[in-house]
Structures are given as C-alpha cells and as structure tokens.
Length: 561
Image (tube, rainbow, N blue to C red):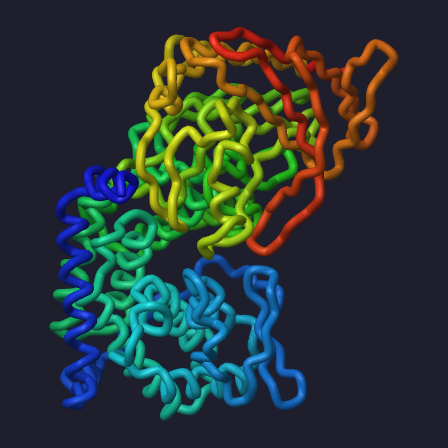
C-alpha cells in the first residue's frame, strides 16, 4: 500500500490524468468496436507522398532474426526463439506473458530489413490484414503506441528502399496502413509515460510529416515540434545526459533525436537540438568502455541499441561535427556519474539519484556502485538485466544485492516493486567531488536506509588513480546492529586466486589485480551476469561482511604493473 502511495505521490499529476483518460478511452473503444465499424483514417484523407521521402541513415543491416523453416516462420528476439507458423500467429496466447516484450518486438517490424522482397511482402501483408485496432487489449502489443512508433518508421524506410522492386498496389496498401497508424499514434501519445517512449512517438510523427503531405499531416508536424521543444527541456539534463540515467537508453534517445534533427527544417528548435546533440555525443564517448561497448548501469544491454562507435560515426556524418573522443576525466554532476580513464584504468562511478521521480521505470538500486576496466578489459561489472517480465529475476536485477555497493540487512536502497515501479526513494548528497586526469575522488552519502532502526546513512569515499589503483572507504553512520555487506560482481573471464598472504588475486588474461580488505569476512560465491536480455552467464561475486553499524571499513584494488 505504501509503495503505491509513494508512486502516486511522485508521479506528476498530468501523467496520472493521461493514464486515467487513456484507460477510459481504450475500454470505450473496445466496447464500441463491437457495435460499429470505425472508418479507416486512410479513407478520410487524400494520400500525397513527398517527392523525396526520408530514408534510414544508419545503414547497418542486422543479423537475420527471422527465418522460414519449412512451413513455419521462426523469430528470435531477446535471445529467445519461437516458431509462429505460416501464416504467422501474431497473437499466440503464450506470447501474452508479463510485459509482452517479446511480442512487442514481433510487432516492431524493425527486423524487416533482413528479409528478401518476397518475405517482406508476405509478412507485411499478413500483418495489415490480421491486426486491426480496437480489439480487446489492442494497446498492449500490435497497436501499442511505442510499437507503432518503431513500426511506421521501419515500414516507410523499407518501402522507400525497395520501392523500385515492389508492386504499386502493395506500396499503396502499406502507405495507407502506415498513415492510419500515424493518425492513431497522434491521438494516443504516451503522455502517461513520457521519457524515451515519448521521444520515439515524436520521431515517428516527424518521419511521417516528411513522408506524407496533406493538412492532417501538417497538424501532426506542428504537434510533434511543440512536444519536442517541451521534452528537450525536460529530458536532457544540463550535462547532456538523458534523464532516465541509463547509458544504453541514452544512446537510443540520442539516435532518435539525431533522426529528429535531420527531419526538421531550419528553425530555432533545430538550432537548439544540435547543441544538445553535441553534449549527448560526448556522453556516449565518455560512457563507453575500452572494449567498445556501453556502460551497463540501470536497465539496458550491451547490444540493446547501436554500438557507440557506430552511432558516433553517424552523428559525425549527418551533422558534419567531429567525432568526440573519450576524455581522461568526465563529470556529469546532474546525472551523478563520474569517469576516470587512462591506458591502465577506466572507472565509472555512480553517485547520483537512481532516476527521475516521475519515471523510475528503468532505475536500479546502484547508488555508490561502479564499473571497472583495467588494461582495456572489464573486471568489475554491473549485473545488467535478464528480462522485464515481473518476477524474481526482474526484482533481483533492480535490487542493490546485484550491484557493486553496500547493503544493510540485504535490503535495497529504494523500494522497487512490479516491473517498473518504485516506492520510497533514496537521496544522494555529494560531500566532495574532485577529478583530474590522474585522479578521481568522490565523497558522497545517501539516505536509502534511513528508514531502518538507528536511521543509518551510507557514506562511501572512492579514491582512484590513473595507475590502476582503487581505494574504497565505506562508513555507516548510525544503525542498530544490522548485517552490513558490500559486493563486487566480477566479469565471467576474471579468475579468483589466493596468494600466500591471503591476498585475493583477480586475473583476466594475465592482467593481475591485488584485492585487499579489512572486512570481517570475505567470500567468493557463484553469481550470474546478464549482459543482454535473455543472456545469462555464470560468474563470481565477492561479498565483504562488515562489522555491525556504526562502522568504517575499506577495500583496495591495485593493478600489477
């Protein structure tokens, strides 16, 4: 009950109102669709296609995840494969599980660029015929506004790419269907959610505004630009970070806004957007590990979106700007991330709040957590995410137990519930933050455990040097005899050894790190790492047991040079 009250309290009233209106509207439309037949939007407006419709700007053809085996189409999303028959069973009951993320991917149609023309025509025709709106639960998958936003862009881009090889009747049918979906999207924007979802909605409308030409589309374009102006002010922090604080989602939003920039004619919004894109591009560069993949804090995956080097190259090509280089030190005070980088070390430290109060859907209990690469190899990793479906794995991925931070009585810093909800929030206070090309020093504390007996506060001081040294000082102020532990999740390729002096040795491909601690007890246990959705890998976790609070304890990592 308290979690629900917290969630309602922190959610902006406009978002709550939109959620109520959407629920009412959806139920009414389902009822009336059984009584009357709604006239298709495509029949109300003349379709006039622009002389030069937009095309995809990132010409990277993905590995095929759709194949025809015998008489059945096989789809692979989120590292899980399913056979859906021929014709495709778009609404198989077993797909209606949890958040329906796998089913949503099926309806995104962003996989069509791996199909030949014959398969493309077959599957698109089949979808248009068998997926009409306003059936019960239509908003959960096939006519979900987020899915529509991805699908309309994918289909229009594919039509333009293949136009010379497609029958005119088929092209007209697809363009008519997409127009109908765009009008539906405009009337069902995800204003109740906001965040990266709304950016996707805006991008789709701007794409449609470049593809079609009629008075309805003109209104849609004006609406999209107005929303974009508002959301840029809300969603992009002063330091350039996307406000949901997921580096992976940051790349996704960055790519969407880059598309928006090229779709907009010269105007003040375009001038404002290029300044924002410049900042966001630097974030991408700074939040990329030496292995070329993104930092994994909060929800996301190493392969969830474009590779950092690909999207930065595209940014340079589209805008004419230089590709930003990762800096030796970077501080994102609004986001709460701090970075030190040298040829020996890259450390990314999280000393910020877990996410925006009004949209904690992708937030994790990772305050005072860090990721560490040494000599270009990942050593200490964020746990990642296995799935969004509600249950034990989703709960565990968000909890502080799976992050490189301190826990009290094995509780999380914030009260996470459901797949995307959060109740009580922790607050972070930065006491001191010093960064140079040689050193990262952060002294911060958070209130995530202050509701427990003795009102404990966790203070952590992290001191890292460019030579490959990391010293962490944990202090629990207050408290009342609770169990206190600190954890470090190791990359699966890191092997753990003990030397004669009981020093822990972390070894990856001959790169050796000494680990020392004054903790009461040190354990190395089996654990798992989720670098991508549906991808679980066995690894090890270091667990440090401290004295009962109040307490001060330390651990130290030193790269052998």
